[in-house]
Image 1 (cartoon, one colour):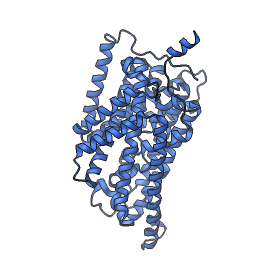
Image 2 (image 1 turned 90 degrees about the horizontal axis):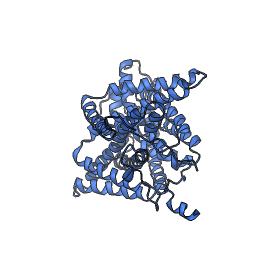
Image 3 (image 1 turned 60 degrees about the vertical axis):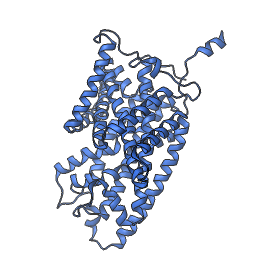
Image 4 (image 1 turned 45 degrees about the vertical axis):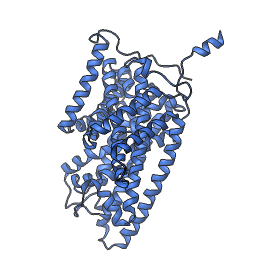
Length: 449
């Protein structure tokens, strides 16, 4: 009888990720070179106050990261925001949150495939774009099917490579800055505050874009069932990842702003940081371009991993067909069906979607999830508690309001596309439950091992 029970027991995810693995995963998904691709936009929108916008955005994301970490303590499951909102507020809202996250997570690997394929085509123009797109989609999917520890080892390698390039940039930047004539102390404080260019409205506008630097930290919570001591490590990893990325990003853009003052226009706003690197040391032009290619590779692979586990959480909870999405491969202990599904969708989108629209649509889903998690934290830690503590109310409320303001500031095309996606998901939920008259989601979580 004992062997029979063992043979029929459901296959579950393996707890193998340490705190260091989780932080590496978060850093790679966000990208330690994240501010490089938006540096020119931030500089122009913020009137040169790039460091200030990065630091203000870090404060807002730390509030949301803290809510994610605290909710992961309560619900250490792979569902992430979908589970938190569904359990604490309403199952239907949890489903809607999960559907918005699916868009976010699907678009991340998709736009990474687009960016990587375009950049690779620049390096090897004789190879068509579509070949590169198939190549990167295939590599992302294959590595993630191999298992979570394989992905963690790849993350370590990617982090080391990007860290080396960033270090080289810092050395080149320091040499250029100290060898180039400049003013006194004002020269070094100008990236934080330039009295000649400062505008509160401009800084706030730049901050709304700077938040993109941190998008992806929530992916850590989707690995709760594969993390060692998730009630402790998910909170620490989520907050520490935002802190590490924020400080590193601030230092990167600070050096860049000293090399290329805001008063000097960029040859191309979208590739401004590459121009900065070339000014610091000409060989860095190609090095930084290749590094950004590697960064998007790591981000896309990590985002696909998070999307697969989000779908697994929704499938196991019966929000999506459980027979396909709620299955774990018995050999690799990964939701293989979901990894392949995300890979196919991402590849299709790489031929149909532009990078710019995809990036804006990504924010549509991510910010809905962020608002949901902050709201769930208010409900669990303040409304449901007998003792009302302001420390359990103010941080998530502030995080919610910041995310709402950013969501309202999205472009019209992104809102329309996002609304269509949400309408499709809500229609599916209504069909599945005959007008939401029956149970939409089963939130019964597996026993902790």
